[in-house]
Image (cartoon, rainbow, N blue to C red; front, side, top):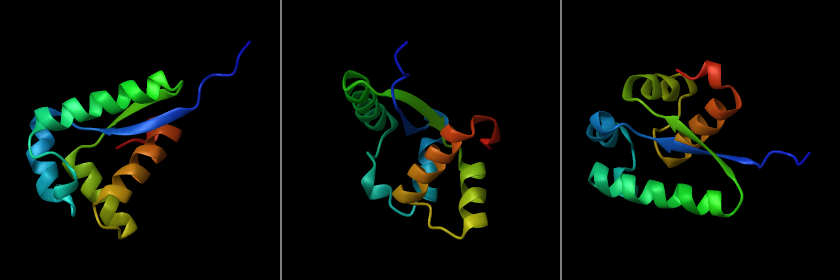
Length: 97
């Protein structure tokens, strides 16, 4: 039996949280200004990873839990924190806030 494909964790956002998250993030300029723009880019990224043979774990980032996670670790809520949060949640799915 073949080994399962490696899994890539992607930060994922709900439409209703997107504007609050942009206000929270320290680098909102790295993301599209609209949810629809972000979703189009995120779905393309997901498709590219799957085409390359990776599994994809969509990790939901919500404003309050992510802000608390960043505060606990004394990290800026930017891209590096989003990716670290997503990777930690993918490794420990039941621990995701």
